[in-house]
Length: 133
Ligand code: FES
Image (cartoon, rainbow, N blue to C red; front, side, top):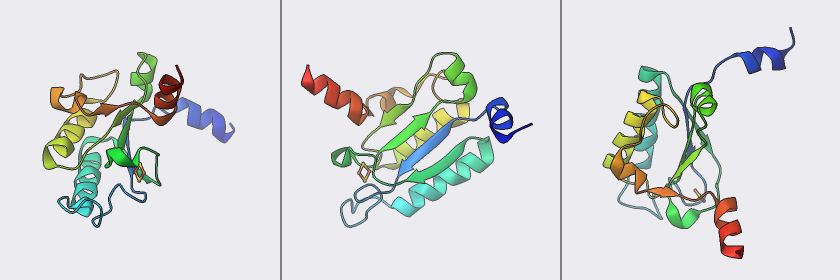
């Protein structure tokens, strides 16, 4: 069996893609947040609850830092969910909400916490397309 067949058959859990580019996670630009602590908490939650966390370079909307993309699990995608972009994730409350939602299964599986839903932002490509209309 080749690797792509094995990979396609393995269900993926909800994944938090944590931007750590030029602005997100930068203590010189966002002084009131312990960015390392935030990432430690997310990784500890992933280890405890079975979702995944990975970091990435700049995702684009730096003016909405910290940006975290919540990718649905395989089951969430099957139910029609897409990746959800969260902006301004700078405080403990939004980190708590991200942890809670990912632990419950994330997009397509569990409803997002109401306060976190207020922080949903448009992905850059979608925002650009809307601006052109
Ligand atoms: S550094 Fe996160 S969006 Fe640019």
